[in-house]
Length: 97
Image 1 (spheres, rainbow, N blue to C red):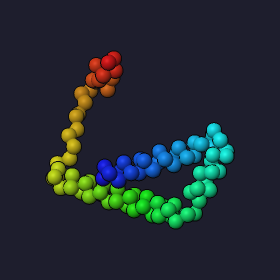
Image 2: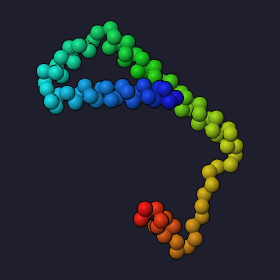
Image 3: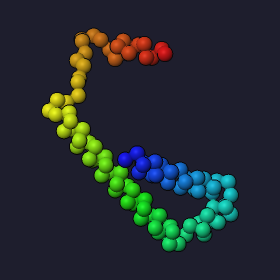
Image 4: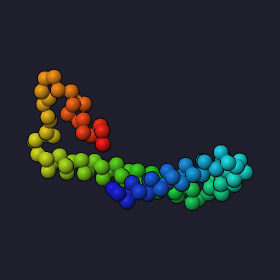
């Protein structure tokens, strides 16, 4: 899941960087568009990204299921607040760090 997440993050950074060139130079953006148009490697790249999304979501579902099995019937622990105690007073040390 970490590998697919890193690959998807790299794609987003690359894609955002290419689109950011439009802010600085229309000519550079047009060059990138011509280079990456509907060429075979762009189509293959799109299929790879789609596959990575499926792999990433599949692993997320699998890990969530394994977590639920390992946790058993017990859910997350819940702290019950006392009357008159606010969130701020419980976390005052975190606010002023």
